[in-house]
Length: 375
Ligand code: CND
Ligand code: ZN
Ligand code: ZN
Image 1 (tube, protein in one colour):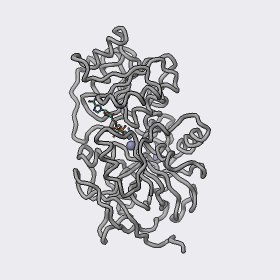
Image 2 (cartoon, protein in one colour):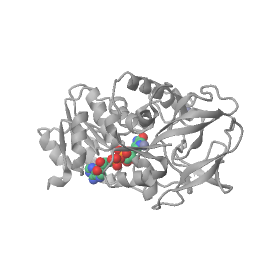
Image 3 (cartoon, protein in one colour):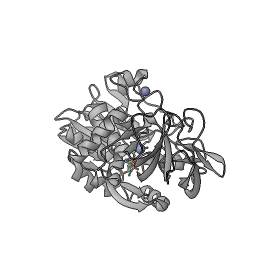
Image 4 (cartoon, helix red, strand yellow):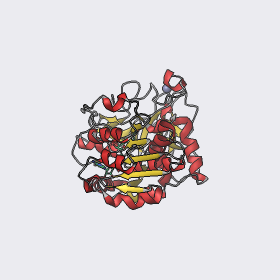
């Protein structure tokens, strides 16, 4: 029996307030309105950005359904939707691409003006499609994937190869694309470069892969958890260092390792202000570029010497790896299918959806790279 046009009751992991576990409850998911798409989620990865909301570092509205790295099947579409149809395999896009705003039209832009990443937590009409006992629940980052069904705007969903394995390609929805793109799209790493990657989680390891694909000759992994080093080496890091092993600040260690030059490209893939400045200070003072990939805490301010930039360094941020999402995600899935890159080493755990709290514990304990939840 078709569910199109009807309210669907399903399980969702609701976060009622920060610093609490998720509760799996039955919610109601309203049918998609005009230009919206209702998706049956098949798989969803756990990214540190979701945990930044749980920890309180990233401020959002509550209650909320988190999750932004998923694959699913279109269940039904609202009026006027043309780019996907029921039955299509899709990836929700936490950075949408409307294709017509000034950013979408700019060749360098990817942060579509229709984006609602960490602001209202509502659909474009100011309401939510999720309710629990009649009360609205906010959505997260244009996607909300820790639920059996979600509703997104048509700008926030891309149709992908129907045979792509959802338990793997969900990582193209965030972790892989964010890291890989930070290296090849945002930094534009050149062959022969020296790179330093601060933070070797799912996103940082994808930066390592991007640096390697771009032909970097030295890729230095930096992490306080040495258990992350073997996988970083497997994916392309030429050396790995632990800041806790040195008395000197890590930027000085990186200058020592590069004959006093500094690295050509550094990437902060943790989400801490001290490491953002350390990464900046690690790159060449004149032509070095540092890319901020880690999500900064909402309340954070930075204090740093302007001398760090004055001599010519470039400091930039990168959201979703700089990709124009709706155009690039189907292509990245095709590239995965023809083995241009691998996702397997990033997936350390697969868990049933109702073990979501266990998945977050693994991340916090530094024991997982990506846990993928199966619905
Ligand atoms: P994950 O937690 O898996 O990795 C972070 C790594 O940093 C871990 O291996 C830690 O051991 C390491 N680390 C922690 N503190 C330090 C420190 N002081 N010095 C060195 N290493 C340290 O996180 P992830 O890979 O899922 O995400 C990484 C960041 O990227 C995080 O801030 C997340 O919110 C962000 C992100 C950004 C975007 C984007 O579009 N820019 C999208 N998704 C996630
Ligand atoms: Zn993410
Ligand atoms: Zn746009």
